[in-house]
Length: 222
Image (cartoon, rainbow, N blue to C red; front, side, top):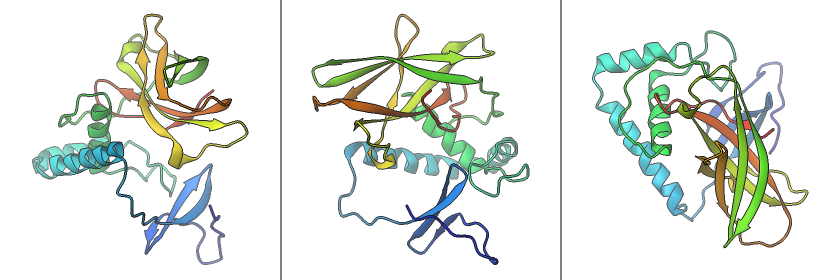
């Protein structure tokens, strides 16, 4: 994607204007034109749109006092968009919608109660083995959590792409999967894959708090 070039008058950009969207990756600013596809989206994408719509409607039906409580809890949650400083945080609406989506990913979609943002444990995800069976690639991973006595509280959601060797990750081709814990306490992802050629795996993952629905920012696989 084209990189934004700062000028004397404009040092940085974010958000959208017209059909241009500015975004940040690895501390650098890029821009892209909004797509206008004729294809309305896959079934999974349409399902996610419906989840998001239900989250918005749920927020609109909250008592104002409850919305203010969400706003209060959001004051300590840093934004992933610039400007990056201690005064810039997300809104209560953003925090509510994030929690709503988190519970939906866990298969427990409901209107969440306002809760303080938790201290997520430091984590690392390591790919152990890949096996194939009937068009499914099974990825076994080890999740290492520090400073936690309740590992079952934390779930792993990942965006995964199986790409040809030498091909970098493409955000548009990554798909979302919820990790499943097996009897060995490993995290397992089952990814459809029909091609018999060798490939490489791109994974970006986050933790979901099973108690609040909150999520961490995404990280790349170790």
